[in-house]
Image (cartoon, rainbow, N blue to C red; front, top):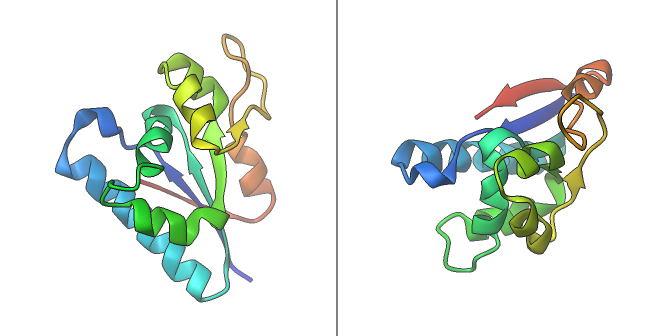
Length: 125
């Protein structure tokens, strides 16, 4: 079975159509792969961690799609949330803060190499 990890890096703080478009495309792909019963893991990393606070808002344009793929969302990079000042908002969203790889200067980040080791292809948006 094909396994795909989708990593969202786009920044909602940019308030651009491009950032929103990247998010939509990431969630569209998660939806399509879920429909095909493929293994999919959605992760928010870098400034993409800021999406956690936005997607839980019922009036956000991507909220319905977020809810449709919520079970594929593994979580938010904890170290990135710390660096980009989004920890409290990410925690409030209910998404998991992931800190499974210790690196200097952070409290831990998502270990993307573990997904590669487990046979996932990684796509970034």
